[in-house]
Image (cartoon, rainbow, N blue to C red; front, side, top):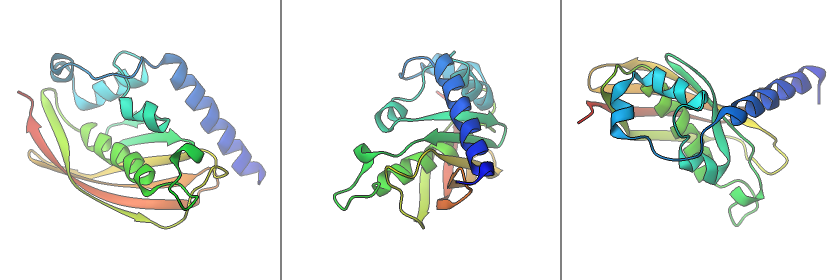
Length: 177
């Protein structure tokens, strides 16, 4: 491993530990909590431990580690528990990690009182992951968010910058009831 890759890996692990130390227990936010703040404020609240982290993150062992308007990053370390019967990380792990990143990127642009849901996601798996891959990050970036539709793109990379998958999504944007 190059010195540069090792430095990135150490930064990633330090950031993950920092966020995990503040995280609330997994759970589901109330509708009142969702309606009270903008999408980016809600996501930053998760990073600060003010709101519960999504239960799927506990199931698949990944967490949000960065968030700003139009960009959200999730980090996880694939392991044997994520394998398919062929001995590599199941495609569902890739898809769930990317759906979280691109969906939350759209959410980060939404005003108070607005929600979203994934309408479509397209994922291209281009490199296998296994228990030796180490931490990976899924970075979602907004392409465009309007009153009814939001689109974003994302990719999964390791600390050396190798791309494992990339995705695009279309999300339905709607007022929360």
